[in-house]
Length: 348
Image (cartoon, rainbow, N blue to C red; front, top):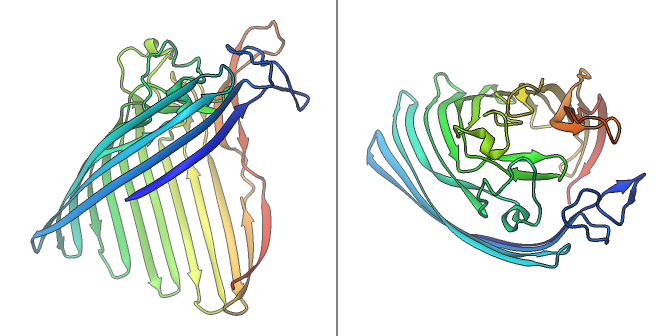
């Protein structure tokens, strides 16, 4: 069983020369109080989970789980003075059928239901987004997802562990980022399918190589994207390729260190795939020295090869002048240039 309770204040303001404007240009609900949006949100969540593992045969077992989640709360809209109360229960069954091990190899089939949570402001309607207009998407507190995968786990040689899986996941609603409002906007239903591979190898007691590789195909599940105000079926900001690689070394005495490689593949910035991001690659290096059990020094170099690119990128509409035509381009947050950090760490 788990639970949490959040008390939140969230607002958005227009600024000119770093000064907040009293009015909110273009707002549907101008407040005259420096707020484009302003919300006091109280949100509680409770989850219950039970799992059972049964070994039917030496080479066959099942894992069955059931989870029940509850979310509920209130949103006080500080712009129009309204209060919205919402709550929701969501039941999620899960299960796995596992064969093996044979020669240190297992085959498994897994499926189940899960969810992703939504911004309470999109549930209460305290902000509206232009992209998915006219109430074309029903926004619950928890958006259900149904997924399944077929996978293989094996240890072909000593100290080498490998996993591979084929997966499919359907969301009742996809989240996309709205740069103007600075929020995640609920959109049409989506489907992701792909393959994943990971491995860990320890050739020596003080050395590890690890890697994670994923290919994914993400599309909206609708025959008429125009009813959602979009021009295509590509899920924005969904990369088709992600790779991570690491080398970890630890003498278990004084010296330790790591080399980490991250590669985010290209992804569409808009739904018709006419504007794309190239993704980015980054290499990080870290070396540490233990002076004693309580004191150690670390030196880290980030973006070792000083690669250029964007850590995050979005499609954005621009006007070069107040009266010029709207044009769409890409805006983003650049990868930090090569940098270093030196740390002194004490344990007490």
